Length: 298
Image (tube, rainbow, N blue to C red; front, top):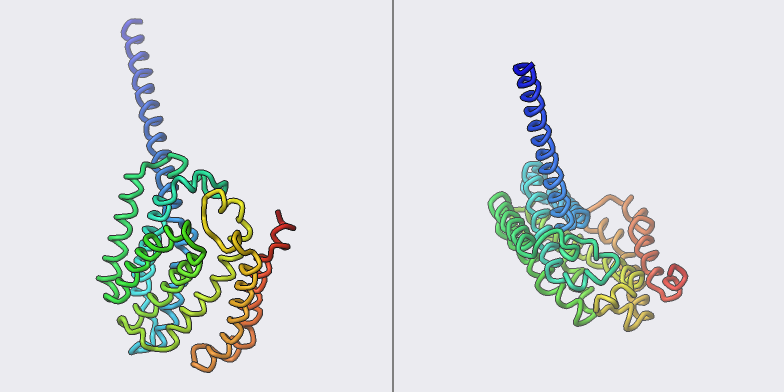
């Protein structure tokens, strides 16, 4: 029985070691999964995906004006990767700046930094790596103009828009400029850095204008939360003007369809459909800006 006991105990020992190894492996997998989730949230992956999409749209539309008139899908891929990394870097820097304010707002207090799931140094490293990689990819795989726009957008978002949010409501308009740059990056990448065509600016301008009703609606919906965070938004200081500006900018989108057709950017079908596909959603956002609408939803 001694030999048998030794064999049995040895087998159980090996099983125990295997179980501990499995548990250790599971723990590592969980930590890795949690870290990936933190990185996604630091980079605001949903917002970054939208930014990347608008850059890709700019690339595809700009390709029609390139030397061969064709979409270079490899370059489109590199442009999208570079744009996404630059957006993630800017978003992470934004959250580093706003840790204390995010902690007191219900819509942001679960973010990795205020929740204590990652350190400031770790987040800063993530922002640095994504920013350097994003700029490097755009500079190496596209052109210097596109890369410079990506770098400028990081600086504008993290260095101007973010601190301005607690100083003056003009921050909304700076944020709209930030959102208008990615389509220009895409257009630039498709045309070797050439942004001289009017249609490039028409595309960026349309996105700039559309964002004002969007931002003003958000500010109206989350006015109490923004007040907690100490942000200076027009929805707090002048709700009526906030609503009016949202509506005015929504109406500014009305000529978009005819202008796009006149400049040969799209077919006449777009001019017919743009009021319902572009203008109407913007106008609905503008209606949300009104104090009455917000009081009904609160």
